[in-house]
Amino acid sequence: MKYIHEKMKSTLLVILIVLMTLYAGILVNIQKIIGINYWDIFVYLNNAMLFSNINIGSQLSVPPVLSLIVAIPFRLGFISETSLFIVSGIFFILLIAVIYLLFNMRFTPTVSFIGSLFFSMLSLVVSWSVSGSTDIPSLTFSMLALYLTILGVRKEFKYYYLAFLCFVLAFLTRYSAGFILLVILSFLIMNKKIVLEQLTKKNIIKLMTLFVITILIITGIYLSFQGNIPFLSQIVEVSSSTSVSKVNVGYDLNPLYYIELLPQYLTSLSISTFYENNLSNSYNVPTIFSYVILLFSAVGILFISNVFFNKKDEFNDEIYVCEENQNRPQNLLNIEIPKKVKIGIVIVLSLISIISYLHISYIITEVMFLIIVLLFYDLYEDKINQIDLLMIILMGIYIILHSYHPVKVDRYILPILIPIVYFMIKGLTDTITKIHLKNKKIPLIILIIFLIILIPINISYIHSMAHPNHHAYEEEKASIWIKNYDPNYSNNNISSDRGVTFSWYLKKYVYTTIPRVLKENNDTLENKLNSIEAKYYIDSSSNLTSIEGYEKIYDNNQTDNHLAIYQRE
Image 1 (cartoon, one colour):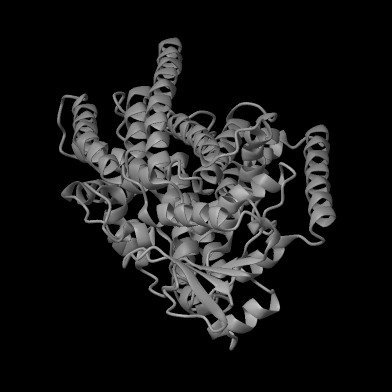
Image 2 (cartoon, rainbow, N blue to C red):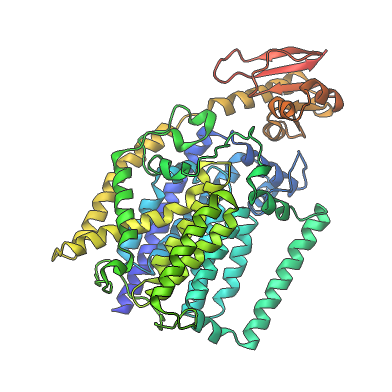
């Protein structure tokens, strides 16, 4: 039976990778039509040029891993946005494969296969799957780190080495991905007995050696090229909302922002008309199916391991698989505390976490949340599935982090869509089990129906995206114009409110000078342009009417995507 299970698991993994390769290929072609207009993605492209020994205005303060990987095709001569899209597509394929493997630790291969396909078709996932942002690559490394940690606990210690390296890569792809460490540590604490047995002197020395070498290499590279370690200051910045200016496009203090907009992120028939200018799925119109997904996800969380019904999981061999190496109960805290006292502690810590979240710091709330969840596990460890709990932690960690921070960008919340799909599957199964339907295949049949419903929604959404981004098109057209207007442009200083964009298109450093930011700092655009002796200023998004000392030499004469070029008189 185990052999058949493993064979099916491997077969479906191969089929999934083939399907995802075809799917990613379609998405890459769509992305080539759309183009790029998101600020950060141009930064990654510019950094890839730097790592290819061409500096066109790079920013080493951002995580380097994605740019380092994209620099490989750049060095081979494939210097284009398509290289970034393809690299993103490869990460997307890997992410879906890892989600499938993670789901296999709780569900059967068939259900895991459907669940991973389901995730790949959610609207927010589709929007950012191959866009060139770091969200999907960092999530891939994060999920790999978590998956390999589970293998390290349940199989062999050697998986910890790979898990650690994947964690480092996740962090250096996107700094906020470092919070996956809290999920990993939670799993290690839940399996403390096994982990302590694994920590032999030999294993500790090997792991610490790898840790020290990795830290020294990273520190040495940053200090050599930049003179500081940028993510230290960014961690401090993220932990404090006061460091974020209100001029930031994503500035929003609503702590329920992501919760309220979850339906828009799940399914929609088309992108919003505001998407091009705001690059946000928050303006999408959700389908009714989004609410069905959320309903079953909520049920899955509510019924988690049937704790509230005081009975063990009713095993359904059409959906669930047995856990390995649980060795429970193992008394998580090694302290005999009365059950009523533990429940009291959970209630008190819950109140403290709520108060601290909005008035002190999200970091305290994160710690309180983990303690609450682990205490809950300690109370009901003979009834709770560890993968279920990991998904709760994964969801909670990232909701707390991004809901607290004043900058709200929809793609930040991508990690929580994994547990939403996971609990949708579990909620559906639990519901069928509770109403005592005899046919065990019913949950699987309904999941297949759900997937069939999602496919045309997905096709409609992709179709709505398949047109050029007009803003990006106008920027590229203006870049071509200035090259023809001034063949000697590369020897002149150029500035723009979207400097990183034109650095990429013009393949030279373009100063970033944003009027609204200068105004916030009591400065003027004219002063800034004079200080850098800019011959040209490209107004891509500020909609200026004039600049003192400059004449307008180019105007695309459009209202929605207005762009103008000014030349020093």
